[in-house]
Image (tube, rainbow, N blue to C red):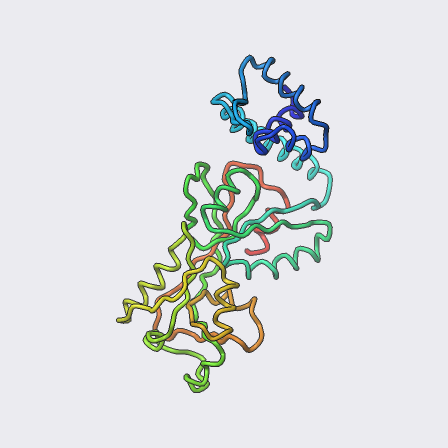
Length: 296
């Protein structure tokens, strides 16, 4: 069984149909069916249950899928490592970022592009659980995230480069700014009566819980009118005057104009820890190393 057959098998396993897998592989269906039959005969096991319209992996097929994904990842990493022994930085660097850290990427990528113009980027956005799975599967090499990195089912140990802590600010519609008479900062208690928008996903709640706890420490329960997993949606709601929020200050660098206003929090003990995360015992491409170094 060679790497070509492993790729064929994984395509069928992911698509659930030989026809769709063949289309994805840009080949005809009959040759792919013959390859699958040949693999099963060589291994002496059935890899798929064919009793329904969609192919389902047998227990042997599940085991092969798990190991094949690892083998394919290691094979791709090996090819990348070999190429990088002779070439300058090129190819694609795959990065994951939580929604509240995306604003940290443009400046770094712009600096890298000036030095390594042949390097391209793939950016994946999501919560810790989603990005942890992508990191584990080697779909991405790095994650820029709020710390600690809460990736469930993460089995491989991670390395973390902590970045400077990020203070929180209150974000309000600019149409409300007159209430604060041109001040650049406010106290937490002044947010007590505002309708509140909060950033929260099904799996990552630490930021939300920290903000709620800080509000309670100041004697009020925020009136949350919307929980959302998207920074962009929350900012658009604020721009329309729907409510206010508390965000890490770095988020504001992506939002210019005069529709939202950021105010320093005078009496809050809120600081957000940020870091770059990668798998400890895996090959790290030179482009990923340069990305990390650019933050040091």
